[in-house]
Length: 307
Image 1 (cartoon, rainbow, N blue to C red):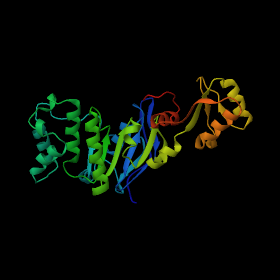
Image 2 (image 1 turned 120 degrees about the vertical axis):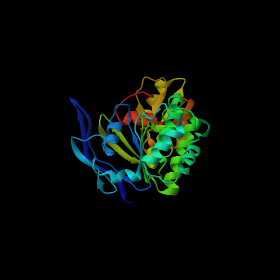
Image 3 (image 1 turned 45 degrees about the vertical axis):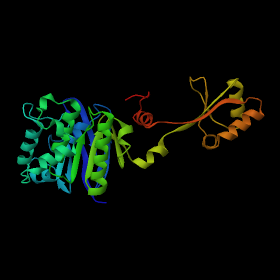
Image 4 (image 1 turned 90 degrees about the horizontal axis):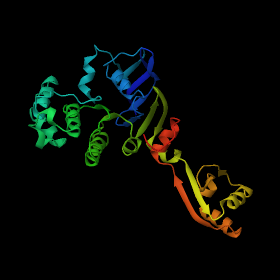
């Protein structure tokens, strides 16, 4: 696959804060690249540099092999973008806002406005002023602006902010269709791993301005840790039995026994047989897999189960 978006040691500093440090990434044609990080990790700063909105202190970014800089305006014909807040003219309606974008994009086909309104399910709000839209519908309007000219590349910063579960699903299906059936390359940032992992083909994790990992989405399940949870009437004795038979029993604050050996996780029935034969039958035997959010927090060196 050809690389559509490339950065080379892209860095940005704000006074004493190094917001982004030597980010080098590659996004391939037709790929949905999920750019994942906590709020303040450097996602938006990276996207602003990708779009030429701010200048890096060092490093470069390229789109379709062309270097991004303020004078290279031809690049924007192929790109749709939504960055942070979906700004609109507050006293103009949804339809009027999109009509302005149509003219700015030099799109001669006037029907594109009604088409994109229908596509983003904004028909009933077409004549409502932008300032009176809900957060979710304001986000839809921002996406409509990004998509009105049928771009080959989409760069989206937290595009599902404010959307309800049904809206998130609709946007996810829309982006899936654009990538799989129309070959659109999508770079999408988020702090929600569970949502991004549902449709991204590759994920980059940024933390404190540093790209700490890039993985194919299919690898995620393999990387999530598993453990076998065991409980008996006498866990002290059970731990001794398991240790004497070569199993790694993890010391935790939990009242249960945790075993991390792959042999035990893959064949928990052997653990059950061992404990029964030794007179310490289990009352609980459960294989627990780390969820994706926990994996993310472990990867960036944080504990807990919430972002």
